[in-house]
Length: 95
Image (cartoon, rainbow, N blue to C red; front, side):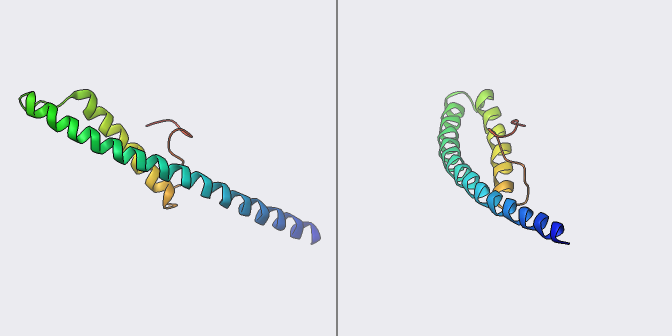
């Protein structure tokens, strides 16, 4: 019986340490999301200007980068709100 109690204490201690590590990850991801949002705004303006001067044709590389950023931001938001335990890039592969 005492062995079960010891095992339970270790699990609680590990969970307690993990929650603080998660907080650190969440802070880092929040900073990255803020930077990504700023970059997305700049890309939006750049894409608009390209379309104005290029007969409404968007830049394919900017469009692809926007798609990739959207996937990353969605993954980050799921981790931030605890809807997923999967961390976004750079901890995991970029989808």
